Length: 196
Length: 260
Image (cartoon, rainbow over all chains, first blue to last red; front, side, top):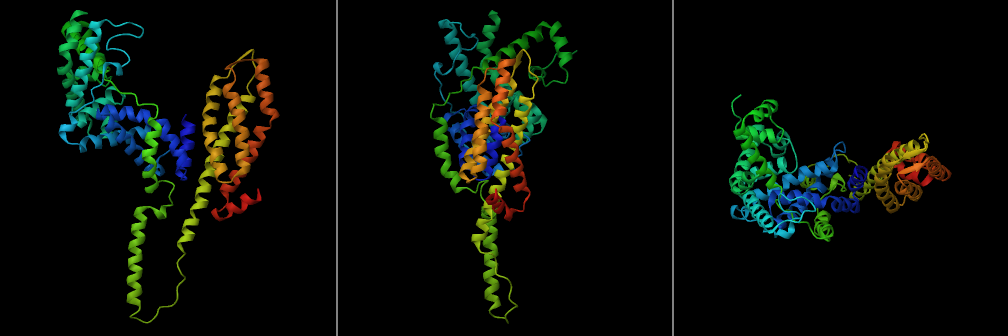
């Protein structure tokens, strides 16, 4: 859909807000997912979606069509989400949505089509709760670096550029994030590994 | 080799290690490191279960309705540069200087007359050709891409079984862009351009919705339908007309449009 995105961007640059609406409708879900990963909160993620598209609208004249609109928007989303997390008070940083088990399609470790046992369901719920809680313990930089590396597949160098950090600082953010995840999760995952 | 540290294993896991070969060989021989690595991958796999709620069906509409009033207030890309806040601040500063100069000037002999500055309405009107020019450039590029896609399709060598799935993907993408340009052309009163874009959209939709595997007879039928509508010729004519208008100085574009 890159042609359609490029067309919409060019029309939006000429002041056509309906073309920009199309971009909002097409990209707001992926933006939301990334924003949620970084903020850990649905309302904050929606605010980040708003801010991302607002900034995109204002900076659209600077968008270079050599890169894809989605990539450009992704970078703006990361910056908006990080700003958002840095601005909120520390006690809010630790608060996270409590998602019910129904929110997740498949329990951790199960494969599609397999009917999970009650034990497996309980284990998955425990793992999810620990993951959410551990992500909440990460600092904004650790969390963003980890999300970009682990979920979005960005290289450490790219993450450093996005966050304005040196490569070594970016690596350390990721190492600290992984250490915290290990501390939170190994008591349960280690138990399963020992059974394998 | 010495045992890799936990950080080494993290980099190895994310394919960011400069010593991947060495670590891999070590893991093949060291049970203790293999066990550490298994624990790490198991933790990182568990992280995948972090839930992300799926927004409801009205999410996109809600986002747009919250955003739209903000965009109207903001100096966005469609605003003439002269109206952007930074420029307005600059214009305000210039205004103060002009008033100050006027007041000072009253105390001194009159200077020779200078031409009056252009009225603001002219500045606003000058945005219209710029907007039209952006549309022309965008439509010209789109017509060129569509023309290439259709020419490549009709010139394809017919075989017993044709696979046109890549042409269909291209056509689907062009349809989405075409729709936007057609709507914009209609809004701008570019009826001739809008009409050809309308014809083009029908042909692109036909290609996009054909079966992806065609016999040589079916492919010939598609080709004949494209050729019989003369769409490639129409697209070529409108594209060259649009390009010609792009080359003209900004002030002449409206005249050229009236002529065509």
